[in-house]
Amino acid sequence: MTSAAPSAVRPAPSRLTYREIGVLFLPLALTSTMMSVSVPVINAGLARHPAAEANLAVFGLAFSLSIFLESPVFALQQAVVAWYGGTGPFRPLVMFSLAVGLVVMALEAAVAFSPVAPFLFHRLVGAPDSLIPGCVTALRVSILFPPMVAVRLAFQGVLVSRRNGAPIAWGTGMRLAFLTVLVLVVCPRLPYPAPASSMAALAVAVFVETFLVARFAVRTPAREPVPSPAQEAGRRLGGRLRFLLPLAGTMALGTLTNPLINAVISRAPDPETGLAVYAVVSSLLWFMASPSLRYSAVTIALGTTPANLKRLGSFLWRFVGGVSVLVLVVTLTPIARTVLEGWIGLSPELAARARLPLALLSLQPLVAGFIAYNQGLLTRSARTGWVGIGSLSRVVAILGLGVVGLELQLRGGLLGGLLLGAAFVAELAALLLLRRRERRVPAGAAPA
Image 1 (spheres, rainbow, N blue to C red):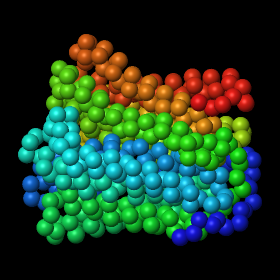
Image 2 (image 1 turned 180 degrees about the vertical axis):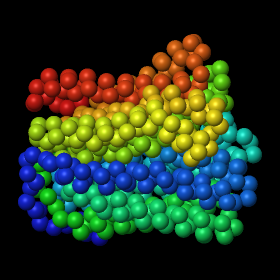
Image 3 (image 1 turned 30 degrees about the vertical axis):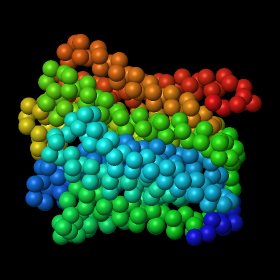
């Protein structure tokens, strides 16, 4: 593989069109949707094994801890988009990303191959003793992910910088295809524990995706760069680390959102019912909001002028806002009952309890989109520390409102929906306040 980029092509017009935004954003949104399908595909495979209930529980526990441990690498796509202007060699950024992935891999291995892993599963997660050995085995397999995911995200960042999002969706599609074949056909025939085999199948699928994205990135023509403070921050190792660490912390705190809310719901008057209702509501809302979270990379790549930034915001209102309105209409009509009872299989009682929090959170895709938009603006300005402050406000909102909700003896499902909504609104409010402060900071001032 060579890092030599083809000669730069003519720069894009200064004013964006909705089509140009959509061409870059929609493949990324499709990628998020396909990635969210990966776990249901694995669950479908595990459900066909003997002891399906135990296997599903083991994989779910191991995967959730694995995601938290490797979450720092998730910031690399945004970072590479910000550092790489669209032309010139990108090999140093790929190698830096690989180094970050290897460090995270070493830290995850230190947890997985030590008494720390059983302690976390038993004391913090609360897994039954009978499931812990399987959880630890699956977690040990998952240490393969950080370096592969880091390299994949680096190449995805190069593709976004070069305004070519379609190969990212193609790579994720191939990953999903390989994963489906492996978990449904190959894994049931292997003489290994089903959760660990499924984790290995996911690793193989991610490797295929990484290889394809790398090939596409090398072959994609370069673009004329538009300088930004973030590019200057990424020229040296120290600058990259200072830039990346707040984003990595943001990703880690993001993965803690659901566990924190679950911890509050478990103390509500109806913990079992509340957890069940919140699990359904949150999975539906995260699924609908996940495409919007990719908008940060789009904003970093395309937000080159004030006119373009205005256009990016208008795109969110028109398209993501339209989706949110559609979700709201669904939640307020009998369609919601069909989805909750007919498709998901909830009892009428649980479906009735889920409808109110689902309606309250129907605008979540739009809120998530504007969070990503403002994160992208601050990242492009090399103010990633401020992005980290926004993520801290999410945690503070969950803990503060959680105490109030428990004092009021709110039902767990409703409380969980309120906490998730408040967490996103608090983060967006913090980011908007920080952006207002940014506009008052003199242009020559050093970024935070």
